[in-house]
Length: 424
Image (cartoon, rainbow, N blue to C red; front, side):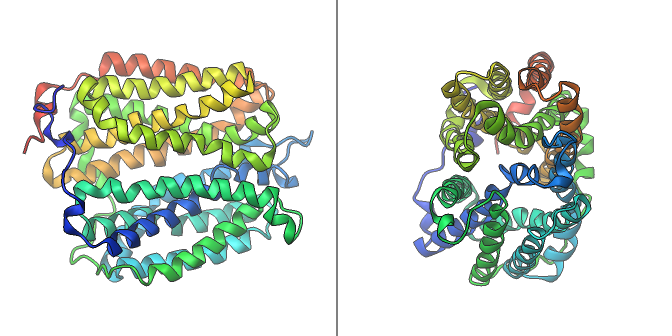
């Protein structure tokens, strides 16, 4: 595939289209805070939950079935989120005010969650929190798109990845040194820090550019408009494979923190920093992604992404040496950029102009919603079936991804019309 065949992959020129630097800083800081909050608890919450008796098996080991159900609250919120964002935020409130309200209330809820130690209490608390947080992801995109050129969106969004990385390093510093100045630090402090960031973010959001509600509210079932796209064989194969790949993604989120601590022997305070290797690699891969698409096209690029995660899980199954295992975490960034980012690019490319947003919503529901929800339900049964033996546990997602690679390679064959549909 050449650039002439795929002009929408061309790198835009110009320095931010004449937009003021102050606006760029505002929006970049917004993205930094948005993903720093998610990045401080998502990678390591399971380590905190594993210390609570309600989330432990009879032998005192973490109960991944219950921990997986807590992680399931985010996929549930991602499915329900369009109702909140489409019918409330878009219709009645300026985006920055709804963002401030959601983050303030979310921060208060997180403080309450830190005081809970029962499964029901933590589940309800995290579900309430994620129902507030999930819609704000789309809101930050909306604010950026309304005030910044679409073709330069990545220059703002990259600060979300930076926020995820930096907060992981900050938490390691908290566990190693800073936290000891106040008390003995614990993994549960990730919720306190996330709450503090949420409250700071709520105040900051009030000073973001005014983004009034749209005159016409978004369709809360927008993804239904894209169902007809499943008649396109290439899109149908991509959607089905994406569902199964998303299952593995949730297994990675839930298992890897405990695997690094108990299976590899990394100190729990360093787990959050080690896991940021995936985001560091992701940033590099995002830069290389346009070049990969121009050279290999969508099909091979996405297969490389799935294959990278398959290789990572095989290395996790081997479990040694430690340096190889830690290096394999970087493959998360390859898979995320080359597959998860690229599926949304392909959907945008082939979708008719009037349902492009619907296509994005449909894919988000299939992956972040349904796929990761199923992954949450499988974390416990798979772990129990192999009695906590990581060398066997990780062969399950590795086999799943290997099948996905083969199915995608054989079944995903976009037509010439697909690859040229967005030439305008």
